[in-house]
Image 1 (cartoon, rainbow, N blue to C red):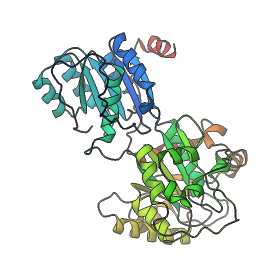
Image 2: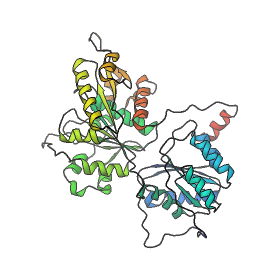
Image 3: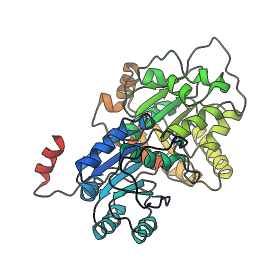
Image 4: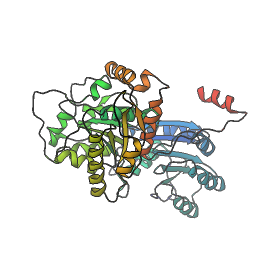
Length: 422
């Protein structure tokens, strides 16, 4: 949690409208979950969710306040923003301490309370609360609080760029990147976009069964037009949390780019999307090198043979040296166990690269081939396939999300599940 907060003010008007000169910048694509104690606050949050400035945010409202939030995040990843309503002082501080034990790093917390006390405000700031809003609140108060978290000068950019590249052509890097993005969107409930950077031969449109008339080429060849509205028009919706910036996959033009050709696209995506997965083609040019070095996290996909080992080590060493203040790239082995093919063991890869692979994905042409031909993800073909858990492991490592916590069973568990279902 970050330490950006707004000090409570005396005599805050109810349901106040923003002054004419006040500008509230729209919030990016973030997930927001509110835990309210009163129906009045829940109604205000609901109205805030209908405001145009929160049009890109995914808002979910639950009753139960602090206790409900702690219970919910015992077994689920936390969203980008948590809005908590609380009436008490001691219960609030103790509850925040408890919430911190089940809350993912980087989650912003907004507290709605009725105590207008500077000492309480200081304690909340010390605990990392992002904002404290005095109740009763109106819809615009909630909008202002959430939007200001991402428009404040000290707030960091929301988007996390993940680059996936193959150590050699044909190793399945695109398949891995598309399935990992699916896991990020479905299992980690993060809004994500896949940017297919292989403009001539990209397969993301085929894998997600999408055929949009526009895509990333329109942005690259019109850099002066690139802004959030323009990018939004180019995105193709795959699921509620997953979008696609597709490649044209046509040969009617030559795709020779300068080093900074994709900068405007990446900057715009970073300002509006929590997670951007770059499907980087296996080629070496100024812009591919720039995309890899500029990413927040990198995954190298390699097959277990000598050429892949050499290329993976070269990529690993170069990127590690070029990004000394970032964590080293991750890598995984794919297509492991091809019948009658001599292979280099994972231990040899780990010894040469001086790092263990995240996962080793077995060679299973039947299910992967069926998924590719049907325009589906592995999770859609076989919900219990073992590779799905591997994609989730990669997604968790790349996004920094903690592993999903298993909820402790109790005598009330069946009743709680029924209530959740309702």
